[in-house]
Amino acid sequence: MTLETVHKNRWKTLAVLSLSMMIIGLDNTIVNVALPTLQGRFSATASDLQWIVDAYLLVFAAALLTMGTLGDRFGRKRALQGGLVLFGASSAAVLLAGGVTDLMVLRVLMGLGAALIMPATLSIITNVFPLAERGRAIGVWAGTAALGIGLGPLVGGLLLEVFSWNSVSLINVPV
Image (cartoon, rainbow, N blue to C red; front, side, top):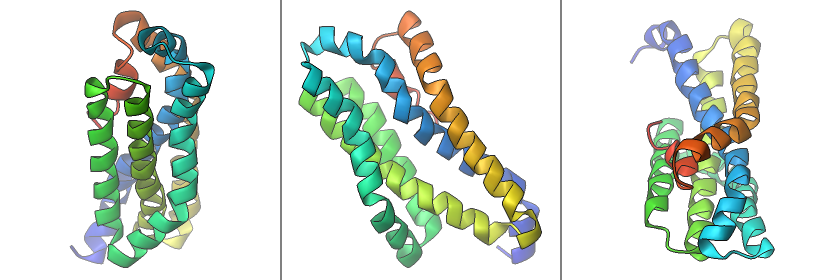
């Protein structure tokens, strides 16, 4: 693909990258609404519930720099694709979760996938947008991630009203 083609499709690329970031942000907060349901379903303790939430965030934060380096070394597109596959597969595997430990492990894998996705998206933006438009693109990217964080509890509540507890993770799969 030529540089001209890349720049021509930059806004479509930004839409895909922003959607990826929205899902990462959404997953930061969506599970919080499901905690009472998880407590009843798995007889989870307060500590268990805290680890279900924190497993994602801790692994995401801890692996972010390493995953960014892997993306720089092996390709940002590969890092983004690998992160989306890992994130989506671990989200789908929630259907097989039989207990709290399973959920924690799956949230760890989601965190690793998110850590691959985030730096790759920002790096791709810097590659496809000229300097004059880069600030606007990064603003859209960051705003979409923040929107996902804010929508998490709302979307989680709506899903739990209609579907079972695992719907809060299954929403990630179509992306």
